[in-house]
Image (tube, rainbow, N blue to C red; front, side, top):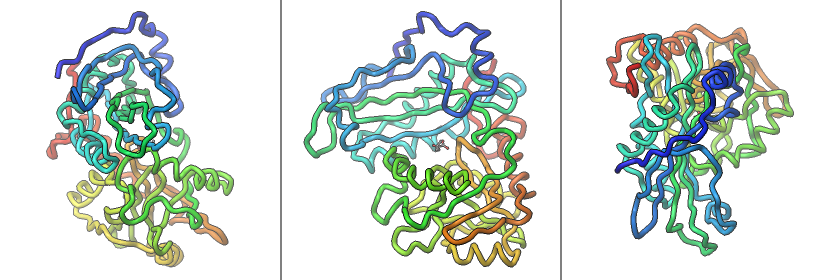
Length: 359
Ligand code: COI
């Protein structure tokens, strides 16, 4: 597919871009351009373009407003020390996007077209990729744009990619985050959409997140819907448990999001000789392991936050500290290894480094 290029008529001046990318609050500053591709039953994917970022004009009867047919991805472009700009495993995001779309009865975008669209935007807004510890957060998404209120899959969709320069998700001063265990609300049930990256999954966690904030915690973590027993994931991040013997446990795929960062951590840990089990881990066991010191570290991971050590856990009626409450050695080692690969500082033995520009 050919992308029509419609350059921004008055792009942000370079000095202003430099100031804006310096220390942005996550998701609050946006680049000049966006990519848009449309789909309908007659033409399939068509009208691909890179154009000035701006509002859509949508009919109030658009299906997405009523039945939440929407999926999205999160990925990052990094500026390497030698000036190259790279993505991290973009085809993993592309494949997951296609699976999310399938689950929501939406058309699938070919992974090569998905990656081409993301690359187009990175090239158009290359000046917005921060250096140092920052990165350009990319948000591909697709929604049902047909104006129709009947209950069926829509027949028109818009795929779009926007970008936002990003610093540390939780702020650069934070060593660890705290978690609130949500026992009142669940995130996903068997047969539901838990494994899809759709907006509705995230909307369903916001009340628990508000409760977490009221309890003085940064994030909420969810248990399984059937038994309220097994730890699943945070609203927008996967979770790992590090044991005193150096082994790790992470909840199995099924109802949780198959995180690209999660998958990378499993590979890196195993590559470093650690044992990683993808298996169910109960909240009760978590409490016991934290209490008797068997559990030494816990961390959450995702594209936006990368890896965030967990210091404290609270729940209705109690709470506990993980290890010393500070970020641990395993968390630090995995973070630095992952970042070295993402930023091209380490040879790419695994084929994860995807160069977009060599400048
Ligand atoms: C990501 O990590 O990219 C996500 O989509 C999570 C979101 C809560 C920022």
